[in-house]
Length: 299
Length: 299
Image 1: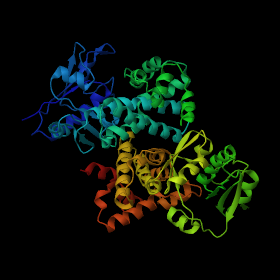
Image 2: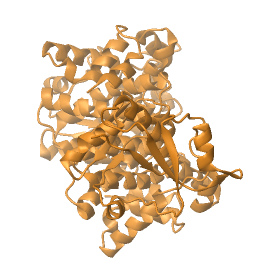
Image 3: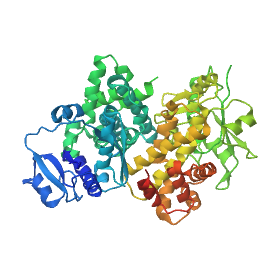
Image 4: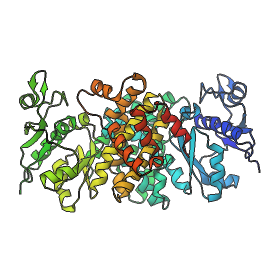
């Protein structure tokens, strides 16, 4: 059976993945239809339709400028804006088993085919090997784990830790403090998933979706960048998001607020000092320097 | 009983630790003699004795310039050069139980009292709490684990991974590749300790001595720095060590060679591609770009 691949979402990450998948399906014609659809919302760039621009130039000029997309990627537009993010919602709508790919995958570097790794979390063993074939090429190594929720939650939680890393940078503290924050954040990620999501396999945290994605995001991600600027900028997170990210969205402060709500309802705020502090600082209830005070006052 | 603390080794790290311990013993006079000795080898700086210089200026002008050492730190000189590194050797000579402190502790940042963490690995539960008291101050948080060997081996092995991270930087690959290298190196560290040293507690790898020290070293350590320069410099590791480190020593290439020897004797070279590649590149048997080729060719 020849499988058909579609990519839903044409931001920097969906576009970067289309570079990988475009090459992969050409290498594995016995398994895949070599024509891949990339779905995106209708939007205009300088008065011109972005989808038409990409179809003509094979370049996502707004979200991944400078990168040539493979010729076998065709653009489709989602007029009604029904695209969605969580695997649970996607599965309800599409009624097919859903998996999650996550890793140390800064989009432009993936698109430039610098060597990197990713993790696919699946619900059913039998889906894993086929999905691995969709993405695996020599410069993009994919590992499969039977632990969808951990993969997905790592992808969300790491952004909160990256906010803390950005605050450390903005406060002009060095590598020791930043490494400590990443470690404490990593432990809070593990504890949160254990407490709220299910029994994760500890090995999953040592996959690319865990430790490696966390490192990449804390050094080069957009949450780090905005939170660094937030420390000294006199502007809100929302203002900096518009100013610095060119249409991309920021997930960390929003995720921190959601998680803080869940912790508060269960009386667990004290057990997650880093996530709590990120939420309090990003929502302008606390000053950025409180991050260091909270760290020093623990234990 | 009031305990007496001495620090053996007056390089950047011993000097930075003396800043922490100098403050700590002043805070805990009920436990410690407030006068601390810092032992170092006799050497000259610009024709003057380094020990005398430090005793007069309270500053280690060679290894930690710009940092004021506490007044309660006294300098002692080891004339015969008998100081040594491994806990096993130290224990044989001193005939007291030995522990190891390791963490994400770039020396100048520790000395400037930026918040950071460290791990003390002990052999006997009863030593842990006292040693924690020696070092713990609000800006330096110490955790104790009953796992001396893992703490000590992490400290050696991380330098090999940092060499790989430096090669990635020198080859101008980005954060994704570097994060992948750190992750693969982390797994090789765990496997090596399991295979050659004993049954480590997995929790130890999530302490500061494990993941956090690895991150700090791979982004800001001296092994990273020299290996980055090695890629394009046309000079040997030994030449760069002299040129870039101002008298400090480089451990990564030496450790990689030692480990490679052990792997070869046991026929295990294939199981440790990253450590093997670092050894082959640093000993000029392979070109630096082989690192990327090896990564792409795995699995």
